[in-house]
Image 1 (tube, helix red, strand yellow):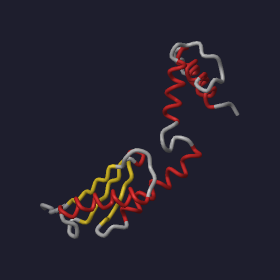
Image 2: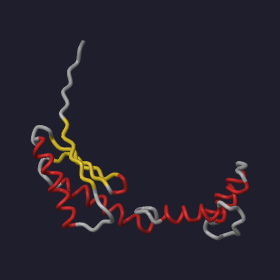
Image 3: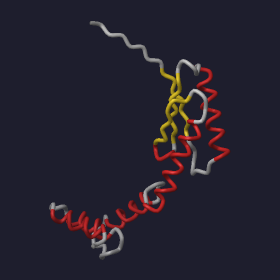
Image 4: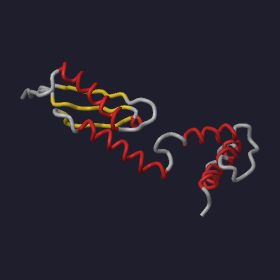
Length: 142
């Protein structure tokens, strides 16, 4: 089986991409000589993209574990209905029960959750914790 860079290059050729694009795809892992000016730029972009959390398979398991831990940490608080780790784990959205959590408590809750995350978890950068308290009233006109 061919490396993905060569397979991608062959597909680009098949669909008549510009020769510079074809070379950039084929050479981004040094599997062939870089002849296009854009090739080293694409190689650098691939390296940057590959370094982000969750980008590589071997990192995926620990990445998913961290996202689950984020959601479970917030989910353990009273009044929390749902949690969503988004933006590659850089943001946590916490949906609370509007009947049991006041506006004031929602603010306190976001702070408490962020403090618990700081104490119990290791993560790169910062994590934004957003508590969402929503009240919906529905009526039907017939």
